Length: 207
Image 1 (cartoon, one colour):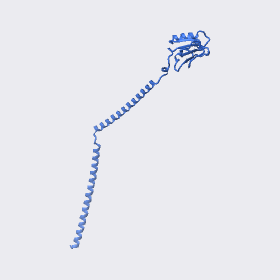
Image 2 (cartoon, rainbow, N blue to C red):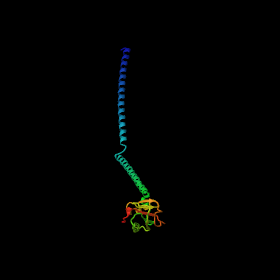
Image 3 (tube, rainbow, N blue to C red):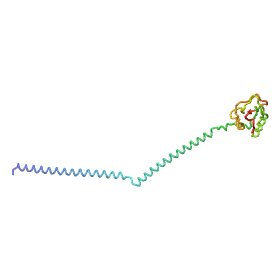
């Protein structure tokens, strides 16, 4: 066998060996790649499991109970604050209501005032009867007289200031109160008189 033929055979064998070696390397690389991928997937799965199982069932339940207790406490605090606001508003309203003066508190009683009852009608003795009536009702300083300047049907009560004479209204039919005084048309002295009552024809009957 000549030298040329031997080189040719050697070259063919070398190529075959090289192809086999490359095939083995490729197969080994593929196997390594597959093993590597599987290993990475397993590691990721293990990490996920570890992260998921960081808290035990008891710890998770305790955390849930703590959240519920906190929510309930916040709700109670809100209700308590609302109750305190309502109570404060009620107290404020009561204080304002108490401080406001009432109409009755402003009325001035007539029981100790000097009252002059005047008869402006044609009924004789009417002023005397009304004087006795008022005296029996607790008005301690009542006198009588006649009034000649008017003959009104409605009884009029003359007082020096607002708030006086209101306790006399119930004794008469439809009496009205006027702020002022009388200084004429009267047949008796008016010295010291604070309240003048001019009896009208609607009150000729003394109950």
